[in-house]
Image (cartoon, rainbow, N blue to C red):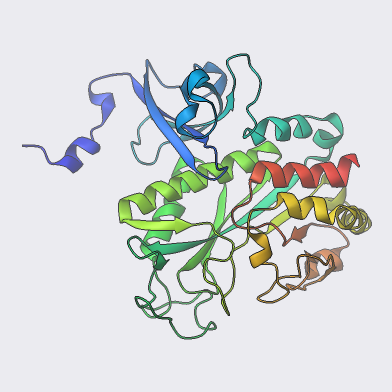
Length: 354
């Protein structure tokens, strides 16, 4: 008799040209990823070739029960690292049957900004640093921490190795390879300052693709932790007290910033960001005030400041950028639970269009 793993790993090409497409969307909380699968007659490489689909929005907090149908529009395709073969993951956004974006569809507004000719001309690059915390499933406590207790103080865990310093590396490496397989432009991983906390980086990616890729990477991570029986948390301050929070530092540059004289463009962009500090903070993730305290490598949430190589600043400029007179900068304010569509498009809007 076939084992369960044998059936899961069946190669569909042996018997059919049909493929499985996993449609993925963001639920009503803005962080709850949802997905369901459908069979397609053959391989697909362009989202425009995919059919629209629908789901029950009353079950995701996105529509009333008496008018619950929400329509999924396929927007980006990734290879499926779980089913493999020609099977795919499909990042979608959500609309009413009349074709209006629903309120939780943040991709729609972002796509409008990124399709603006002035923004397109600047070819905005993003590198997103996604921090997250792995939690023990039944007790909601970080992986590797003693039940009801605390590990030794922070210091040895950042990029650490060893059974007493790195917790969950098998999950992290599985995620890294699965993202590369899927076609996500994942550029690296590392252990973070708090034990049980990790980071992966997506990019450099251009415009709306950065949001699509980060959401795909988050989905893959959620699926892998599901298999491992571990919970992933994107809470910006999962453990109160003298422990680092979790952010999503956003590295950014435009064509003008990457060319000769770009440092002056960077300084002007940072000045614009400072003028809209409150608006950006309001859009940079729920619960971020618990993280942005002015301690643990953060600036205070009420204060905007920038500096070269300063990890306690709102905006950090790298030494190489200062030296070369061109390059990129890092917005350190976004929380780990930020919506990348909102953050990336807002930075482009503020620095290019205003």
